[in-house]
Length: 345
Image (cartoon, rainbow, N blue to C red):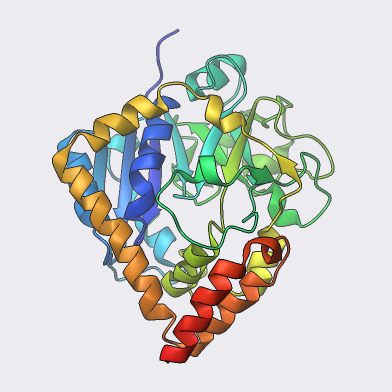
């Protein structure tokens, strides 16, 4: 079997501290190139992407506006649509920095998944939500190693827990990239497109044109799941609310977003079984420019959090996070830290 050319499309803002871990994982998983869109970054994300572009791993597009009325991410995807790394790819997949592909067949890679479903034109990668697990402070470690408590395999609600991203053949059936699925289907071709889910089941006609979530109340991860880490540490979540949302930029992140996604019911370390991730990460660490940019981005996150805690709404949010289960058992140090900042305000 010829190794397919798989391009991932990634939108980023102030997430350089997570980028090298994400890149190492997805290169090991079989992604051959990344088209990355940076959005008015202050933490050096754009500079890190420039360096990765110099190394031939990334095509970096600065997505600095004006933005489509549908949001920052849609504007970025419109720019990516025309990029040669997208138009020439065999397969395409739009991802976010908090999403990690987790294949359960063969060598745990995307080519192995494609080989397992040879008739598929599109494969849905259903989210598995990974919760905060009471981790208050940000630390410079891969999220896949820190956050190992997840939602149950079978979910009945909320429906967002069953949302998916789509790995699809770049055959011209769809003319535009989308956040969750390809868009603008060609009428003469789309009916012949065959969609399969992460369990290996062939999907119905509505998936070809409009669905963005899998059927819940049943297993969806037999062949592949998409590990989704939407929260991270409580400290990182405060920074996430400051950054804002990429799609619905007018929606404020708060406790409702946190509670709906903070699932810590089942331990799942399967993503750590992927081979060669550490080798790719060491290669990045040995590049002096990348290593320096990474360290600066880590320091930026720590300093930005200190700045945000000087404002009462951010202190109030952090305090509420500390009081949500299962945080109480591990929150004494963080609570003292919070109290010390309240006295400075």
